[in-house]
Image 1 (cartoon, rainbow, N blue to C red):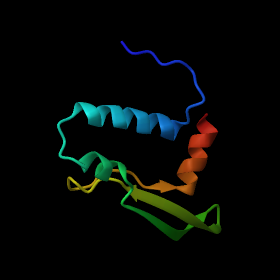
Image 2 (tube, rainbow, N blue to C red; image 1 turned 180 degrees about the vertical axis):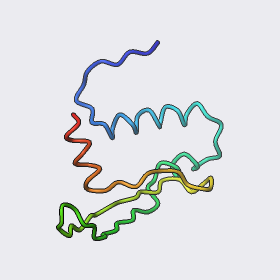
Image 3 (cartoon, helix red, strand yellow; image 1 turned 90 degrees about the vertical axis):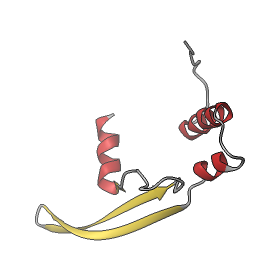
Image 4 (cartoon, rainbow, N blue to C red; image 1 turned 60 degrees about the vertical axis):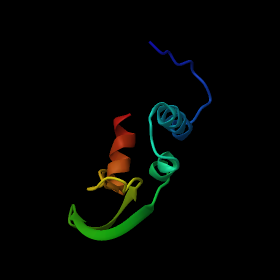
Length: 89
């Protein structure tokens, strides 16, 4: 079992490290790991919603990393989603 010591590694750095280790273990065509890792596109949308009798503008984002297999999977993050996640901590 692998154990991880506390470090100053950021979440993104940790994910990149795990991804790079995994790609080395797989028999992928050359360059496919880099293509999957790269963020192909980021979509930002804004839409109005009525909350507590007021109109609020909600912003949302979607990042697409790998279109090597369709349909692409993922989630749509909104500002409210991010705020709720912070409040749950």
